[in-house]
Image (cartoon, rainbow, N blue to C red):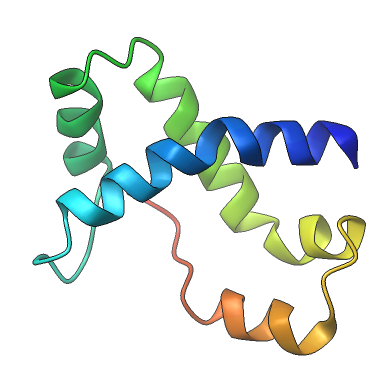
Length: 84
C-alpha cells in the first residue's frame, strides 16, 4: 500500500497537468503527454507515462489494494483509458 500511495503521489501532479493542458481535446494520447512533459522539463516522461498506463490497465487491482470501495472503483474505471 505504501508503494502504491508513493507512486500515486508522484504521478498525480503530472496527470493533473496533462488533463488541464488537454482539456479541450476529447482523447489524450501519448504524444500529447510527451509534449507536455518536454515543455515542462519533465525528464522521465516516457517512464511516467508507462507507469500511468500500468495503473490504468490494472486499476481494479490497485483499487482493491488501496481499499477503494467497489462503487468508486467502478465509477473511476469508467473514466480511464490506456494511452496509445
